Length: 140
Image 1 (cartoon, rainbow, N blue to C red):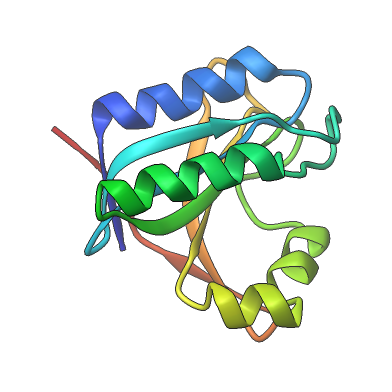
Image 2 (cartoon, rainbow, N blue to C red; image 1 turned 60 degrees about the vertical axis):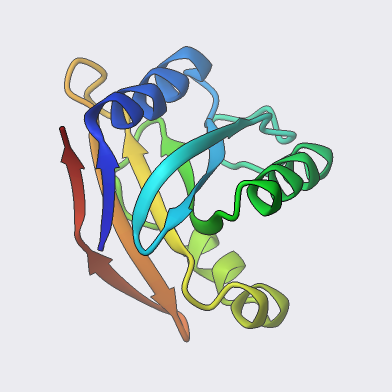
């Protein structure tokens, strides 16, 4: 389960809406399942159907997380025309041996902008090619 303040949930959704019609992406960091910082990233794919996190920005985020004693909790991205559920490409990427080995407990937070007036945000785990819905709480 991930817990995120309503302010940070809104910041994630705002980032995704700002990047529309392209997919937005970023990293969520914190401790013990509680997200305390977001790192919006550049989508190098510049695409409405895929994303690649900028490696330079990832390195900067990792250094900032290390300095602040935070853990990588989740990777987030938007789906511009589909539900907030991992696509087959998302599952394949998360299941690559290097990713699965280095980030076994990382969550995947998806923001659906299929209905832009009512964005939908969901959390999932992806393990051994299986999508496991997980709780996401936007709290005060």
